[in-house]
Length: 261
Image (cartoon, rainbow, N blue to C red; front, top):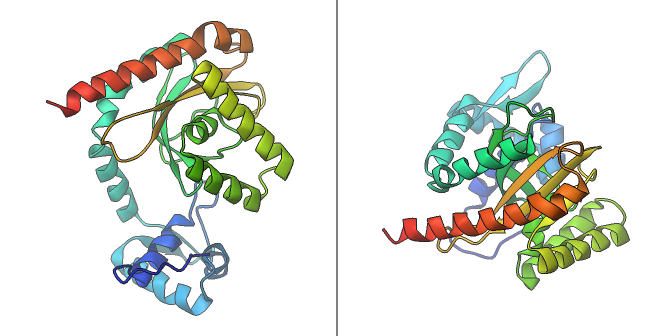
């Protein structure tokens, strides 16, 4: 459902069209008018007009065989342009490569988007056996290390909004969600990082740290993951967790020098 916004500069029609595009995910790449209507809260008549326009503009395609819409190739060009404009990636990628090789897994850069975590970039170790993340993929906040690190680093007001949204979505029982988020805050205060052990995927561990980047415009999170055989709780506490904290500080210092050039 699109929330009404009292802003004379806010273009409702544009917001509705973008809301349709945001409804697509890798796990639901094909959507019907009815499904788009349910996802956005818009009437089917409005959805029909918007999908017609988006098809004409190249942002949607219609699959007549399966009678549904999929994202058009023009969306990919926007994503490519966005990644090309993210100056942070070249600064972080060498660190991500080092982390992935050390844990024989993968390292990723992520940010919050629509009350979930969106993967922006991924580096995978050649020795890794875990199913790889992909750029553009969305994962949960409460059940991932990256989501927990993002939540723990937010202001009190933003944390409240995230709690309310997650409870409304019923990601687990209400008490369980609140307990997980409270534990994430405690871990971050005490250790400087957050972790997940078999919470996102069975037998997979993750560690994440927020990146404080002055002037960047949004909070980013650096995360890594591997099977528990490579990333045990003991290895997280003794080696990988502290390494991630040091890496975050290094990235922040490099970024600080870069922006004052």
